[in-house]
Image (tube, rainbow, N blue to C red):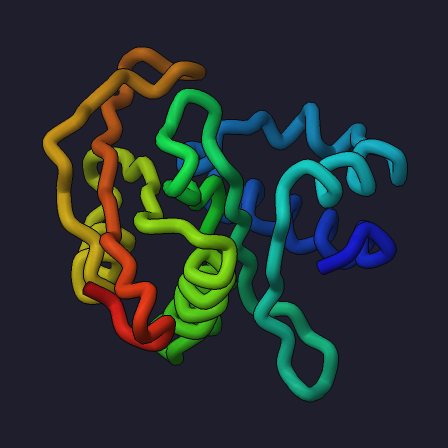
Length: 164
């Protein structure tokens, strides 16, 4: 999405934070105060894609960055969310396919993400999508009571539609 889509992206992001506030590394109250300038800046810094149906309804989102401190050929998922009423309908798969293609075309070798302990539905999804547990664990920076694990997907540059 380009920054002119700031309003729609903001709506979806706030809906995600309302739905699963413990899952994202952000505070709902803070992001509810974002202005147009904040959302535009976020879209310039954090590439984001939405799953939008033919009627213009956004059912999910995913964001991908080059995480500071990670290898230059790794791309990192910083948010993946699907509306509860659209789950188990392929929306997350479509979003993951989108970023996989983007990462391969960008020369990435891997895609990584952090997943909180107890988020079994997301864990099942990413493992089925080809991600592997790395065993690297850390406390969630905003809430040290929570623990997360890093997952990684090795990309096949010869075939962007194939997960390794």
